[in-house]
Amino acid sequence: MTLACATCPVRDSAACAVLSDEEREDLARAGRTVELKKGEMLFAAGDEEHSCATLVYGALKVTSFDQNGEERILALIHPSGFVGELFQPFAHHDVVALTDCRLCVFARSEMERALDKHPALARALLRRSQDDLHAARELLELTGKQDAETRLAGLILSLARAASDSPCHPADQFELPLSRGEMAQMLGLTIETVSRRMTRFEKDGLIAKKGARGIELVDPARLAALVGVGL
Picture 1 (cartoon, helix red, strand yellow):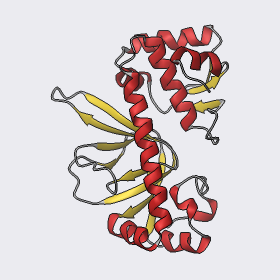
Picture 2 (tube, helix red, strand yellow; picture 1 turned 90 degrees about the vertical axis):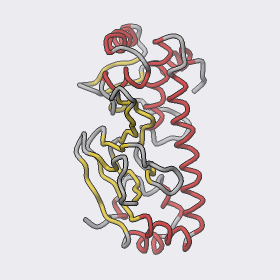
Picture 3 (cartoon, helix red, strand yellow; picture 1 turned 135 degrees about the horizontal axis):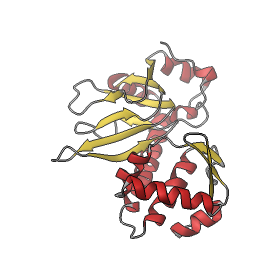
Picture 4 (cartoon, helix red, strand yellow; picture 1 turned 45 degrees about the horizontal axis):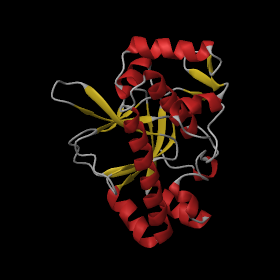
């Protein structure tokens, strides 16, 4: 499937936003659209195929497995996020769809040619790589928090920021891309603890559940106060 840049929902937030319409069309000719169902793999550890992608919608997880076969979620990729081997190797990691996803996929050789041709794109991808690394570090730091409430509040806020169109404010409503089990695994908690804390947040008026995975931030300031950060 060919790329449809004119109707792309992340055309103003992805790295390619720095390109002119003509430059974007030139880049689009080198790429293709890939759609994944929840649970399908984009990249597998040990893959020899070298490619990279921009996530158009959905959510991805970057995972590895320890010696006991337990999965560890190392990072989350959100819409307009970039994933591939240009700046960070995935030779030992799987990249898996957390939800149904659509991506713009490019062969690494084609993307390298585009970066040589458009230096602004290289700078934009470097900035996004730095932002994604910072977000991954923030998520990993949550596991070092002593209190389960603080860990979970931090994760909810992180997901709300990723779902927001604003660089300054978290989204008021969003869909959780993670199951209770995946949230527990990321935070080093049990599923029961995550469920109890989510219920407590709802009873205390911090959040409201909307359907199976929908979340509304009713009082984001109080949620941020639990983490010790400002909005």
